[in-house]
Length: 106
Image (tube, rainbow, N blue to C red; front, top):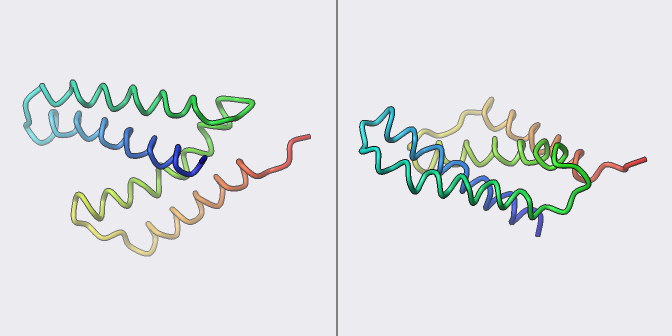
């Protein structure tokens, strides 16, 4: 369940942020902001669904997933294939996220 929540949160955050990017950088109408804000609200709500004893730990682990999802967006939506350094960085980020999620708590 956790990977699905993080994946959905990443999609919601990226879509929400892209709406602002489209408005401010691509010259789209300001109406793009409305669904963008709704998407960002869904993102925040999804992160509250993660079973964790601390919000900061949830957010830190999510960061690795966000990095990987952003590179997937780069490839699929923007047509730019991630390079080996991009993929290596994403792998390191996902490994860090796994350590945060699976690490023993004392």
